[in-house]
Amino acid sequence: MNEPPPPAAVCLPPPDLTATIEIIRKPERHLPLRFALFDFDGTLSLIREGWQGVMIPYFVEVLQETGTDETTEALEAIVREFVTRLTGKQTIYQCFALADEVERRGGRPLDALTYKHEYLRRLWERIAHRVEALKSGEADPDTMLVRGSRPLLEALRERGVTCYLASGTDIAYVRDEAAALKIDGYFGPHIYGALDDYKNFSKQMIIDRILRENDLHGTELIVIGDGYVEIENGRSVGGRTLGVASDEAHPGGLDEWKRARLIGAGADAIVRDFADLPTLLSYLFGQGATP
Image 1 (cartoon, rainbow, N blue to C red):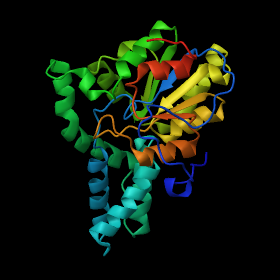
Image 2 (image 1 turned 180 degrees about the horizontal axis):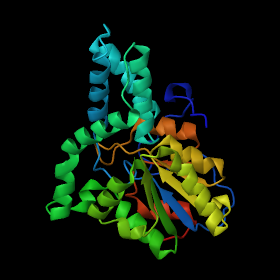
Image 3 (image 1 turned 90 degrees about the vertical axis):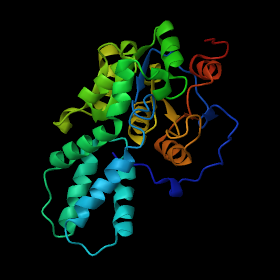
C-alpha cells in the first residue's frame, strides 16, 4: 500500500479554526452506521503522549554508535523523517527503518525486535506513572482521553453501533491501558494490537474481518483515527473515515501536520476531538441526531 504524499505535497485549504468538524468530502447516501473501528493512541488515549521524545533520541543514539561523523542535528532530522512517515504502522516498522540506517552506515544492526523492546522499556519509564495513577484512582481517566471520547463511545453503544479498537501498539499494552482508562467495556472482545509476529496483525486485517464476518457494505463502517494507516485502509474498502487531528500536548488544539496527512490519506472529515457531540452525531447519523 502506498503512503499518501507528505503534507507539503498536498494542496489544502486553510483550516477553519472555529469549526468543530471540517467536512472534506460531502457524504453520499449512506447505509445506517453499524460498526466503528477506532485507533487508540492519539485518537482516544493520551497516555503515550510524547512517545516521539523517547523514540527519536534513542534511535539517534543507536546511529551514533556506528561511528558516523554526522552531527546530532543531521541524524535527528533523518530519524524524525522516517519515524513520522511510519507513524500509524506497527512500531516494528520504525525499527526496521532504524536497522536499515545502521547498515547504511556500515554498522551491524541488531534484530528489529531488540530495538523495539528497548524503545518500549524506555517509553515505559516515561509513562509508567500515568498508568499507575489511573489504576490507583489518583488520576481521572477522562484527563488522559482525547476530549469527548467517553460520551462518543457511550452514544455509539446506545445506538447499537459495535465498536472495535485496533492499535499499532502491542496488544498487551492496549488491553492494559484501555482498562486503566475504563473504556475497554465499550469494545468487549474487539480489542486488537500489534504482535511480535508482526505479519499476523494489521489494521487492514481487522477491517477485512469486520466486513467479512458481518456481511457489511463499506458505508456501514466508519474508521476513526489520527494516523494515515487506518484512514487509508478504511477508504480502500469504501468505508466512511473520520480523521482526528488531535494536538496531544495541548488538548482541544488542532495539529495541522496531522490534518494535512489525514486529508492526504482520504479522510472524509476532520475533527480535533469529540467535544462537540451534537454536531458529531448529526454528521454520523444525520440531522436531528441527539446525544
